[in-house]
Image 1 (cartoon, rainbow, N blue to C red):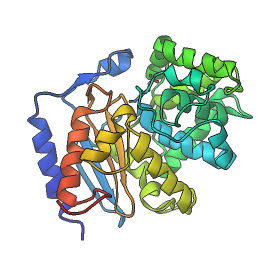
Image 2 (cartoon, protein in one colour):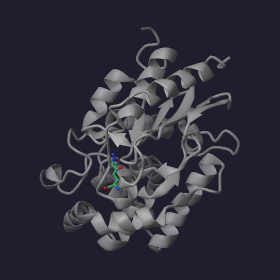
Image 3 (cartoon, protein in one colour):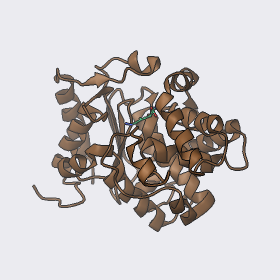
Image 4 (cartoon, rainbow, N blue to C red):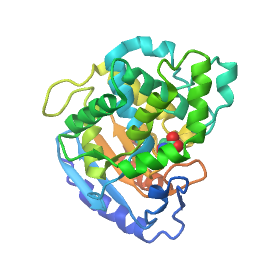
Length: 311
Ligand code: DON
């Protein structure tokens, strides 16, 4: 039924290979700066389990903020809707690492995908654990979702995060002053930095995202979360997943998506597909320039925009 997809993926890979404006690779973490902007990978997994891949789909990259989707899933499992007392669910209209709203909004971050929100989520996932155990639990979840035990944390990237994370340290301290970080900041940040350093290939990431296309069900191993929770996470990905460019992403692509500064994007078409793309060069908003372009082409060719299937 979906065999029309492989030629589309092949066409996108060929088109992206010809692009000369590839965006700027994130430079603030040495391990990210070293990645070639010529890389491009794509993996599409449909609801029937078929997989369509192209380019560097099997090459692991730093998932960075894409990991925030899985950390949120874990935290919701722990504290349920109580989570929304500590983190909002509105787009921020600001950069991913912005601090400006926190003072006026009493240390409650706008949403779980900006850095401040993700640090609160790390603090929630830390409760009752040592940082090492909390990150191991998140890694276990990601491996289970992807059905792949080879997924690991890139320790060099995690070290780079800690050495350059002055803004994140400031965000965590500022929220701690409002009582919205419950553990010592260095512990919550340890979890956050390692979470960002989880490495996955497009194939692994698209596999890990399958539960969000399947109303919260794992394709092989039972239920991950309720259908309502999956719907809500998808809604947050659509409204907040690309930070201050979330509106433009909805306008151009119309599919819930979560980006990371490693150049990866996870996109979910409910009931239809889990998609991962990776191109390390970023646009001015810190989202993958050609990853976005690839998803735009895919949405156009497939009619997968959630707003309308017709062009
Ligand atoms: O500076 C950080 O917090 C990053 N390591 C993660 C941020 C990220 O991927 C933001 N997304 N575009």
